[in-house]
Length: 73
Image (tube, rainbow, N blue to C red; front, side, top):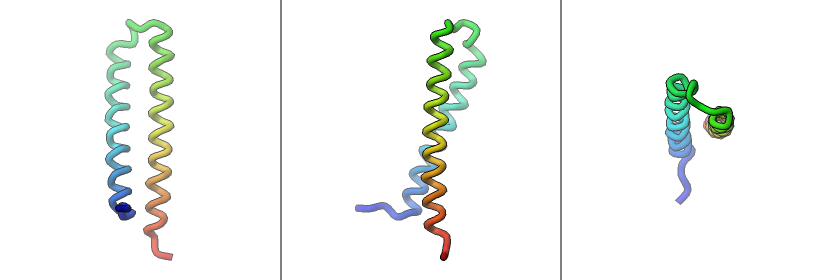
């Protein structure tokens, strides 16, 4: 059964909140532990951050497109 636009927006917003919480936790971990990391660890962390940011951008664009559909003509 297809979701309504409002339900889809809520689902996407929950995903955005999850990714943002993960991002905050990872940045806190970086501040606590990064001085112990090897160069490879830092590169891996940067790649993870880039992937996370890409997903957040995609989700926000998807949410904005759905919000545009809700606007009256």
